[in-house]
Length: 315
Image 1 (spheres, rainbow, N blue to C red):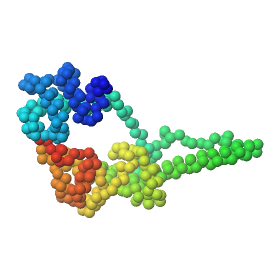
Image 2: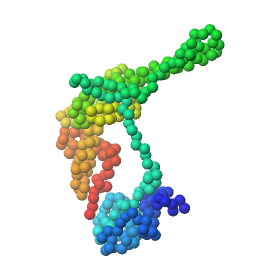
Image 3: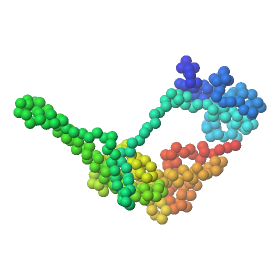
Image 4: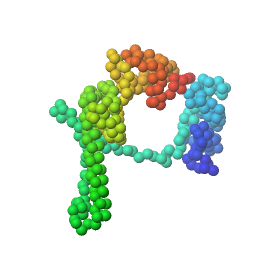
């Protein structure tokens, strides 16, 4: 019953069922389609194309996801141009019909710190405008001094007073950790801020923590969900912490740059002959980057880039 409600395709248990619900609605109520009839539809009746689309989704979903026109044409015993028309109908469907009612609000990021250059010198500037200053209520301090204050009350206020002071000290200590952390980031990544992303250097939280004399977990907590405004844009502080691989001329190459190079190679590949992970590894090695096929595959998957087989376009 719920699946019969708008939007069509709601309450489906998987993608296949979602698409079939919408295709069945098209066959029952053709006017509900968001796809406008084209010149090619005059060759193959609309209803026949919808029936073919249903068969593709129901029986050949993996081939459909790979856009394998050749195998689909063979299995459906239809010309590739007709299969393409059915594919166009499927592409016009909504794989997530409920998403239109779940519009995410745009999150505005207010940087907690800024890296500013003045007279050829870099400075760390904290953004304290929206941070309220904490003050202790003086009436409670007076209660501690007054002799008429009951002992039980005095002990309670004294304990709360100590907790408040500790909280203020912790906040100040966290702020100092952020400033010292940013100063190290600024010093180690100055070329990045001056010249851009290709100059990012690898940096581990553990190494930075040792330099400023605190535990790694302290730095990790301090930079969590903190953003910095730089001449290169706004970045999360965690962005500057990454492992490294052996790059050109023995220099360390940060993982974000390695991923960027992998993505660039894939973006420039021939979609009919996509690069395998082995070929990507060889190409990176030719550029002087020591990396294995398994490493390339791992980072490709981290970026949600499909495999070679899934990227190949057939026709």
